Structure formats: structure tokens, C-alpha cells
Image (cartoon, rainbow, N blue to C red; front, side):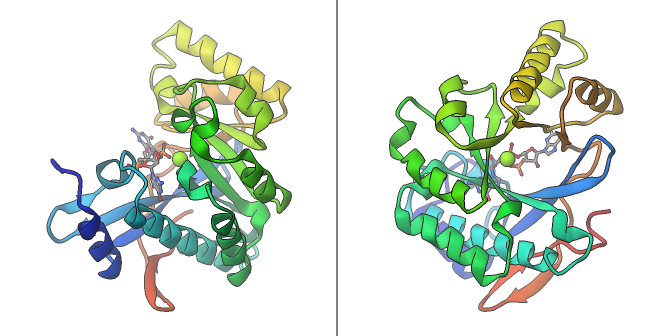
Length: 266
Ligand code: C2E
Ligand code: MG
């Protein structure tokens, strides 16, 4: 898409139910699925299929982005509630990407907690992925207190794209971080660049020392998986294991949402 969609485009897409979620499985070192990450898509009659980088990732905070984010939260909590009724999937975690401005207000925090409760979803299974690249000194105006409030309820925080931002180690101290998810850039160059290997090893060691989970994304080959496993990574995601999954559409009250089914993720 050449131009950013307007506020009206986004609001109308939400109204027309043009957004949906795909889910990419997350695996443990034994190659067992332990969760999934929800990824947003927009099927626009005007622009075709759009990825988040086209319409949400770089957009400034706005009413439409907040409303889309609320829709995403609603859909993932609904899905997590469905998994809670399944003997296998009840232990799966759900990772959802959020922007820091979603955590500015106390109402936003209450919304997340109430939505989880409404769908019978276990807060301990929800991971909020905040991109490290979003953080500036001073946390761009949002209060870490809000994250601590969510943490108290069992919700986990993952620092996404770790290694690509300022990598302020004090984020790891000041925020209730449970997981670091290293950027796929490091995984991509892992087997061709000794320096990347050292960086990956150090990040894994750091996570180990701080007792954090360390996740790798963009794992595309068995060789990358082997290296990361030996380096001590605990979670893996990428095309080697599975692409973001196909959609299943179900009615969800007044809106529709994409839902995973047993045939989507094996
Ligand atoms: P992310 O959180 O880093 O998500 C991983 C991205 O890598 C996804 O792109 C996924 O489709 C892609 N990917 C997964 N496995 C592989 C692989 O093995 N190789 C390669 N090359 N790519 C892989 P996608 O879906 O286009 O999402 C891009 C970004 O948009 C996400 O990056 C996330 O930051 C953001 N995003 C996605 N959904 C949402 C959402 O619901 N809300 C917000 N605020 N941001 C979202
Ligand atoms: Mg992510």
C-alpha cells in the first residue's frame, strides 16, 4: 500500500468486519506446541490483503488504532476462553502484540482484565508483546505501574524485537518482564555470522541469569532450531514450524473473529 490508510478507512474496515486474526504456533525445545501468537490481517476490498506493517505498525496512536486494538484484545480473549475448555489447549499461551499507548490509562488496563474475565480466559496464559523498539527513555509516557497491575493478575509481558531497540537493561529491571523475544534479524544471520552467534548466546545467557524465558522468532531451518536449542532458547516460532494459521470464522456476538481450530495447528 503506497499511502497510509485514513482514519475513516480504518474505522469503516472495522465496521465492515474486514479485519481478522491469524495465529502462528509457538513450540518448545521438544517441538511441542505450547502457544500461539495472534497476528492481524486486513482484507480490504480497495487495497487487497494488508499486513500490519501497512496499516498499524507505524501509525500514530489514533481513535481507529485504539479501536482495532480493542477488537484484537476481545478476539484473543475469546479464543483463550475457548482453549480453556479443551484438555490439550488449556495449557497453551496466547501472545498478542500491543502498542504502548494501549496501556496509557487505567481504563485500558481494566478493559483487558474485564475482557479476560468475560470470556473465562486465564490471565496467566496471556502474553502481551511490547516491542522494545517502541521504548524510549521515560517509557514514552506510559506508566510501568499499569504493567505491574497486569502482572499482579498473572498477565505476562514479553519484550518483542529484543536487541533492536535501545536494549536498556533497566527495562528488564523496571518492567515486570517474563520473556524476551529476540528479533528475527539475529536468527536470519545466525549460521553465517559468528558475531550474531555470540550476540544470540549472550542474550540467552542474560535471560537465563534473569530467569526470563527466551524466545526466538523467524526460525526457518532445522539448523537454526538446533543452534538456538543448544544456546538455551526455550520457545521457537517461525516458518520451520508453521506459518500463521488459516482462518476459521465464527460468529462472536455482534462481530466476527478468526479462530483457530484443531485442524489449523497440529
Ligand atoms: P512480530 O510481532 O515480530 O511478528 C512476527 C512477524 O514475522 C509476523 O509478520 C509473521 O508473519 C512473520 N514471521 C513469522 N515467522 C516467520 C519466519 O519464519 N520468517 C519470516 N521472514 N517472517 C516470519 P506480520 O504478521 O506481518 O506482523 C508484523 C508485525 O506487525 C508484528 O511483528 C507485530 O509487531 C505487528 N502486529 C501484528 N499483529 C498486530 C496486532 O494485532 N496489533 C499490533 N499492535 N501490532 C501487530
Ligand atoms: Mg510479536
